[in-house]
Structures are given as structure tokens and as C-alpha cells.
Amino acid sequence: MNFGPVPGGPGGPTVFDPYSLPSDDNVNAYTFCVELKGSQWFLQKGKMISYYGRIEFNGVGNGRFDRLLRTSFHSPLHASDWVVAEGQGKMLLADRAFDVNSYDLDNGNLTIRSGNLLAYQPTLALKQSIVPGFLTLIGTGKFVAASNGPVVFMEPPLRVDPQALVGWADCPSPCHHYDHGYMSGVMGGLRSLSGIGGASGEEHQFEFVGAGTVLLQSSEMLMAEQAVGAVGAGAESAGVPGAGYGGGQGGPLGQLGVPRMPGQLGDIQRRLGL
Amino acid sequence: MLAVDLTGDAVKAKNGSMVAYDGQMAFKKMTGGGEGLRGMVTRRLTGEQMTVMEVQGHGTCFFADRASEINLVSLRGEKLYVESSNLLCTDAGLRTGTTFTGLRGGATGNGLFTTTVEGSGQAAIMSDGPAVVLRVSAQYPLSVDPGAYIAHTGNLQQSFQSGVNFRTLIGEGSGEAFQIRFEGEGLVYVQPSERNTIGGDI
Image 1 (cartoon, rainbow over the protein chains, first blue to last red):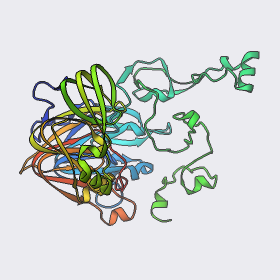
Image 2: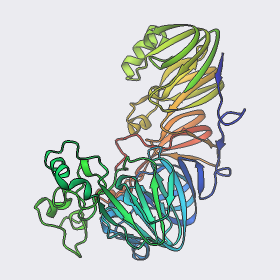
Image 3: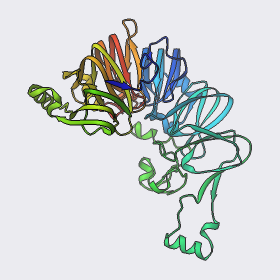
Image 4: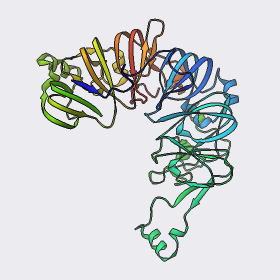
């Protein structure tokens, strides 16, 4: 009998060892290999699938990473989702068999959906974007991001579906665009009142103008993301910042109906038992 | 999708995984994984159940399961350890059995037992995304997240590695608290995705 076709040439699948694994590059479209030489990488929890060598994983929090966090981690809301990997060896990163790619930033900035970012070098600084649910990376270095399907790069001016948006670089003004014409007039009024024939699901887009690059994924399926700031996105408006505002906010104060105040440290006080 | 050319011989495959065939095929369910009464009792006791059918005939038979990736493993007398849920198809000449895995099984959420495939021939294992094959040698032990492990071959010792410390208890866990450490000589198959495991969030 014959099992076929055999992938990866006559010898069967490629077997990797610590030498043949690439350094800071993709192993295949779904797996990325990071080489650590006494250096550190920030890593989203649970995305490491295996490693060679001695690597330690430590949660982001108070303690020995204070200096590192001061320069390259400015998102207390996400503190519980990130770890610092440190040591010698090569580790493999992957996320639910989604496409994984690395990107180099050279003294630049890039904003990305929080659930899509897998790992980054501490030479980059991670900050929360003022667009809820997104994180901004500033500086020089490499980061690894996952996307559902390959990433497509587009140039503004551009309107994109909120669910397909992965991130953007150097664009000064992302904003909402609402297709008002469709919902106005006699027929539009009927549509919006009755809901019949109304929602095509495409009345709402993000609009980008100015110079820069917009990153899109070729699927509208969202990766699990953290509800950050004011996003209480319901199922019908997933990924749309501001939709369902006031409902479903995280944190003990959110449950009481109190919006998160500026300067408040996310949910860190809850984790410290305050 | 896996295509198997048959010339009068047989393969064992996961029950219901045939999607198409041409030629003449006969499908026969093998009670108890085709391991006889003893195998049946063992599988029932260990919870490592596997419903297997035997496919015999002339032509090409196509197997697939939930669009998962299929990886072929050629065995020349060595033993393949694989979770029964990840095993799609084997040559009929390969012996399958059950073995105790120790603590690792508890962490992967797949029970304390695993399936072994032994003999000479080919086996097809499934993974969520194409598996990466990693070599383990004496100088280079490998640590694997329990949720990403699917199979291994060769003479490997597994040990359970835990990074739980006081920080885990105050809610600053690393998310990578449990790993399986493989030492010895062999190959480990990992998938680019993680199952939900008991220790996964710690």
C-alpha cells in the first residue's frame, strides 16, 4: 500500500534540532522560532509551544523586572496576560494554528489589536492605544503577530471592516465611518425601525486617511482579545470600540456601573487585593 | 486529506474518517480497536477509547477529519506514542496498544494513558496546523507545552516540569507553569496550537 503524497520531500517531514531551527524567523507559516542568548522577550501567555535550552518564564508584575517594565511595558491592563521569557535557547511560538509573522520596526510606531500580538523585543515599548482594544508599539525592534489568514498591507485613504483590521502603522487619524445615507430617508427609516432588510453588517467602517500602512487579515473572525478601557463589545458588534458602551465593563467598578477613571490602574488594585 | 493506495491489502483508520474512495473497498468496524478482547478491556479501563475500522480493497481511499492537518510518520520497528484522538490511520501491519504515560497525560487533559503504534509501516497523525518535528538528543533535551504535544517516537524519558512559585499564587503566573521535559533520543511532534489543558492558565 502507499500513503501519499508524502509532504516535505522524499525523506518525509523536516526534522528540526537546535541547530537547524531558524533564529528569530518562521519555522513554517504557523510557527515562529525565537532565539534567546541571555536576552529577554515579552510574550503573551500560553503562546509558547516548546523550547530547547534553559528558558524561564516569569509573569509581568512587581519585582525583578521593574527596570525592564519601566522602559518597555506601559499597559497595566494587560499585565496579567504577558510574561517575560529569559535565558538561553530557542523557543517556538504559535497561536491556534493562525498565521504568524514577524515585523521589524525601525524607529517607528505600529498599532495592533491586542489579541493579535504574540511577542516583542524589549527594545520596543508597548503602550495602550487610545483606540480601545489596541496596543501601540514604539521604537526599534522585532515583534511577532498572528492573523487569521495572511496579512494584507493597504495604503490609505481606505475604509476597512472593523473585524478585518489587524493594525496600522504611521496613520495619523483612524476614525469611525458610518454609512448614514443607508439608514436615512423613508426606506432607511423603515429599515432602522423594523430591522427588516436593514443591517447588511457593513454600515460601519473604520476610516484611515493620511500616509501610512493599514494591516488587514483575510478573515473577519476575531482573535480573542481583552476588553480594554471602554470597550464592552457585544457579540453583534465585536471589535467595534465604543459599541455597547457602559455595558459589560470589566473590573469591580465596572460592575457597579462606574466608568473607569483616568489614571486608575486597570484591575491591578483588584489583584493586589484592594 | 490523506490518500491511500490499496492493492488488496488493508489499513486501519479512525471510524468514519473516510471521505471518498475509488475502486473496490470494504469497510469493517473493528471492535475494541482491533486489539482483541484484552485490548478492548484495557481501552475501556484506561479511557483511551478508539473506534477503528479496517479498510481493505483495490483503489485509492481518502481520509480526513475536521480539516485538521495530517502528518505521516514512517516507522521502522520503533514505537510511536500518540493520543488516540490524534491518530487517523495506520498500516494494518502495525500493532496498536495502550500505555501508561504518567503525569503528562494528566496535564494534557487526555488521561493518564496513551496509544502506542509499533512495527514497520506508516501511520498518519492529525494536528491543528502542520506539526513541527523536533529532535531530542542527549545534549539537547526539549520542553513542550502539554497542550501542544501530539506524539513522539524513540527512546525518550518524560518528566513533568513545574514552574509554580509564590508569584503564581498571587495571580502573577506565567501561563507556562507546566511543561513536559523530554530527555533521551527521539523525535517529538508539536502542533502550532494549544488544547485547553488543566494547567494552561496558571
